[in-house]
Image (cartoon, rainbow, N blue to C red; front, side):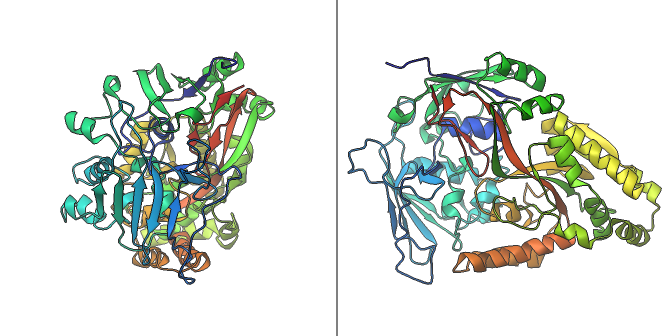
Length: 543
């Protein structure tokens, strides 16, 4: 008998955007999707279990693996004896085989079921991935599939979806062929956009899975019981989940409360068990109290705040103007007086947790005042004209204070008065995506634990998450070349050369790297925050 009710209470600052893992990737939506679905592999701490040895028959190719197995012969029910990496575990795949040329993966699926009792098959994966690559399907992160053979061509309508390198060999075997070796591919498929949707349900509902709360079917440790928009999402344990015995929670009740102060008061009154991270921000006027709170936990994550320049704007196409505005900002002032949770000020986009770049080195080599003079001369405009520019941000307390601090620095260090433009969350990122903005404050949270996830966003100007409109042939070539390198150091050298181009041309510039700061009740154990900042509740238990 359980010693207490296993009902966890948390908060989202907004409703999730969809129940369809193919469609959205914002932190709130992803947190729900990680509860409700599972992929071939999953994010999970290894917790001392051995990492499956990469059986390497080619000493020049450390990425080659013969096979990874989930050992089902062991007596410990439903637990792997080995994991894939310190942060990746087997999910719906129980065995993974990679070809000698590192361009084909074969996934052998375990016996598992959808939450309605129907078997999960390789055909669900093939359907899900190929449907996302339909040119008409709304998938802003479809570029994550582009390592797969012909995926990009299919998304752009240049070939049939049948030519995409994904096929179910039978109900339990999925074959995936890649354009070129992709060392981070298993990290990639651990992200929720690669989670399958139930083909039998999607076809019946004409692929509209995002607004059918009453007919939800998932594959994860929890399943949806109800959703009252703007009020509460209620999920319960999925009794068809293949590892159901490891799931200790019976329910998760998710409040939808946008007001930070209200959410904090509820936490203080024990009406919430968790607060913070990127799903329920803290109220800035309560930061001092929160910093000294005994429940506070701070975890480094691969995420960055940045300023995006719309290089399609005739003035912001000028490198010197971008450098003047980008390098004149006092980042330490923001991290010490606005955010305040030991964030790392940095001009770089690649998070500190991924690669230790000198955070502010480039600032020492740039004179913003001189850059501004050159820009004004080349553009043939006066400084006063720059007040026509607008700096956009979305309407959260921390974003507003950050934007105000940057605006104030521009005014006092460069005597440039740029107006602020506040929009709601959806409106802001829609404007960025469609380049209806001048300068924009943004937040980058990586989707897989590899620097490529940051750099590939700017590989092509038409990528939906490239808000800048910038592209560079040498930059794109270096990213492609990195995939063919035979060891990590050589690969990183190519990626760092690409990052150097990014820092020279500066279509986007970092502000700081995040930490994930949460308040967590003492009786809550087993919560996992992955290196990319995603929050996982599969092993949570209330003591």
